[in-house]
Structures are given as structure tokens and as C-alpha cells.
Length: 129
Image: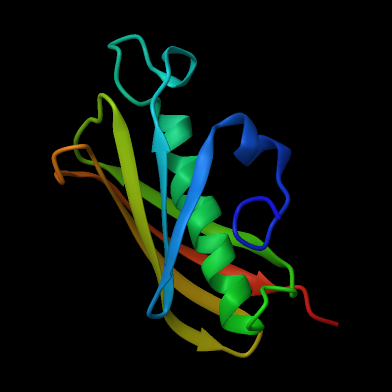
């Protein structure tokens, strides 16, 4: 099923791949293609943000249910861009805290050389009824 536990046409459109589950989170990646690049030939900022957000989303879902069956909504997302990627981005997203229906997460994206490209923090809300 899709990207980890989520079917998302946009994530599929961005060619984001599930890699594996890690303690308190997930690892994912995207191999760059020309249509995912910015005017300088590197990873587009929208792609990087989508990778970080999607990875934190599935991390939040797994924190709520072992199969990721509980939906979440992004409440807040802050992304800081630090470097550039030319061929691949690898993301690690982790849960940092949970307070009631709110989940707090962080994620980092690294390039093909392991250098930091971006980091994000996000707040997600459980949609469990």
C-alpha cells in the first residue's frame, strides 16, 4: 500500500519511496529527476518540504496505531533549508512528544553525500474519532 500506510497521489507523483521504519519514526527517500529540480538543477524546495511532511505524517500515524490506520492532519510545519541535493534525498522523521490529540515531530533530509539539506519540525493532530 502506497507510501508506508498512506495512499497519496501527490507523494507518488513526487516519487517518494518508503525505506524502513526506525525507532520512533521512518526513513524515506527520493531519487531526483529533472522534473523535481529547481532552476539551479538541485532538489526543489517544494519537493524537500513534501518529503519531510509526508515522512512526519506517517510517523505520526504509526505513533497512533501500529498499522498506521489513524489519520492525521498537519497543524504546523516549519522547514529550514540548509544545503542542496543533486541526486538523492534521504529523510529520517521521528516523534518527539505527544500531548493528547497533538503529536510533535522532527525530520531531517540529507543529500547523496550525507550532508544536511533541510530540517523540519511539525505539529500533527490525530483524526481519531
